[in-house]
Length: 529
Image (cartoon, rainbow, N blue to C red; front, side, top):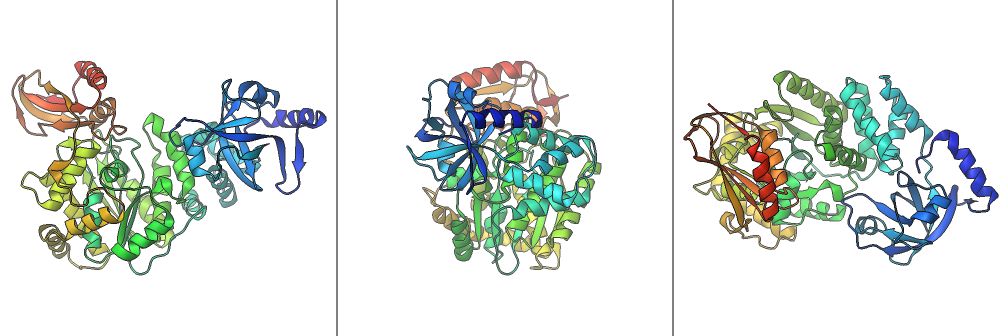
């Protein structure tokens, strides 16, 4: 529970005097009252939320800005608070996410307590806000409180925001990365363990679903984890969900790697550097992510997955997440420095992101592009295939499979042409409970409602604003609606005639299409001259 220090003693005294709370020797916590868990038919994204009766909460000085501890069988579970008159006194409305994450069942009786966080974490965040360096002990205190959900959302937002205001200190990044990785599960795999990570922010860039089965078909271990979309309309998480189950447990990952040499797993369902997942949730609503936190998050997950060889892809373009070579090179240096400190052989490739790769945006259509490349369909996106082969070749050199890049490139190309990469993906779809391992690229179900966007002028495409395109796709309800997508009829350098169709929008919801039409009336993501 987040209380100001000057009020905490007064609150506890009042409660103690009135015999409302007592000190539990076993849990060493101040318990306020006990209540029954009642399942609430409410979903609240990934936030763990307990709903209390508003009048009863007011009696105990609990507000909707607080956190509370739910204690069951001497185990503490920290949750956020919501208040409602619809919940009866002495009951707790538990959201679907809470019941899924914690071992509660309907009508379980739990004790409600104030949250006891580490005072050192708040002191350290104050130091960071003032631009001061924090030490290893302070970083560990912050990460532990984040991981245990004991920092308020406001405090966490302040901590995340410091990365925008102050230059990242390398020592702090290394300490943070290690502390984050060690907060929960660590994996162990034999031999060379490879990973490819893209920092994201670029539409039409789904190379992971091509590179992972390709490398695994060559005998390289690739236990790939990923997040869901933060700044783009569809990340690897949304795309994998189109074909197979990505919410795996640790035992599933171990089994998949042993049997198939790879996996495609959403890290939000794993106890894998969980502190970073909470930071992502704070960043997601505003669609931005601090570079320092992003670097630490990526490397912590690699470290926790026992990755020995890692390739980082940094797309650079005027409307990408990283807009210039100078920033990209700084990031590359930090990735390598942290990788070296963790014992992870890390290389960074800086790639062009002046326009989307491929022609589609949206989970279902991006998966179609992936399948077309793996199936070597005549209408596949050659720019996406080329980038995937380039990344695969660099990883093959990094993992010592080949000394020369061109030899590695030819080897990767052969895995596509021979169908071995496609076969590996089909095996993985089946192993990860996909409905149809044999699905073809043209069999994917698409949204039915569409409208065409036409060019107001004649000329050539000089620029494509990817941030603008991301906004368009999100207005169509991507990534929530996997069938919402945009098709680009024109790319950079293409000639355009006045009133020619330049893009097509698809969505399940007609109202979303109408809103998108209105938005595009104010300006197009194309610059045509």
